[in-house]
Length: 298
View 1 (cartoon, one colour):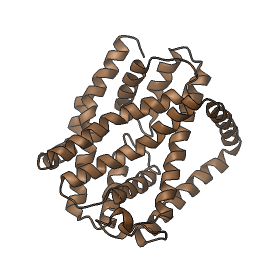
View 2 (cartoon, helix red, strand yellow):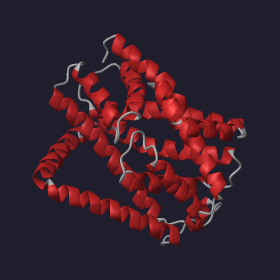
View 3 (tube, helix red, strand yellow):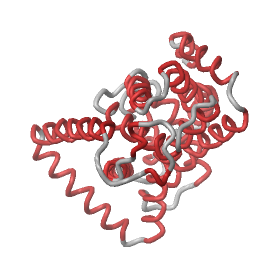
View 4 (cartoon, helix red, strand yellow):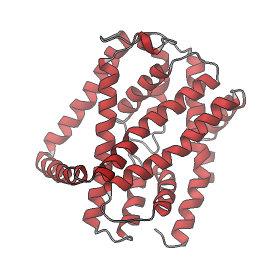
């Protein structure tokens, strides 16, 4: 399956490899370390959502395996299925396992929206320029932030429309997750793990994007890269696809272009970013998934 995915997207893999071959090695090493840390962040947040003791080592391996499944099925369905099976095989009922995964997803969505709201409220001048430093951030809405606000509004309206269509089920789900979240809040260790892991995920992705851009000699601030990633990933969520193929790529390129990164550099950076976050981990995560299945951990 890894080979099939590689052949299908060979142009992307090849282009990303070409970009990385010309990049600064230290920045790419930093990006690679952050990509590995994503599995750690996923493990920590998942630990916070589980009420029973579980092997951290095995849970980490499951997060590695789940990343492979996420690139096969859209909207994170593959990762959810892998984690659900693991939790049910480790003493949780199907309902409890589903509740834990729902809580983890809800925490991820909440932290993402909180960070995005912070970006919009602190609307940087960097949304209309490439290399604006941290002190260039000022309250207000620049042109880029206005576009981002419109995109986020569209995302919220689409979500509200979906909730209205299934309002009874949605209300029941919200009440259920609120109760679980209240239980977690009573346990400081679980709450810390859940929110720390959830906040770390978008921060690590932003740092990977920033490191790739700097490695390719694109002069951009960390603040700008952070804002671009948050907005692009929010917009791409409107079009679920396996591993975000297509939707996230397009929105990231558009976001970088919106802050005056040259088109060629924006495209090259996104290709290199995808190689580090998707293609490079694909082979080891596929092997880990196969190993866990063979050992009946899953």
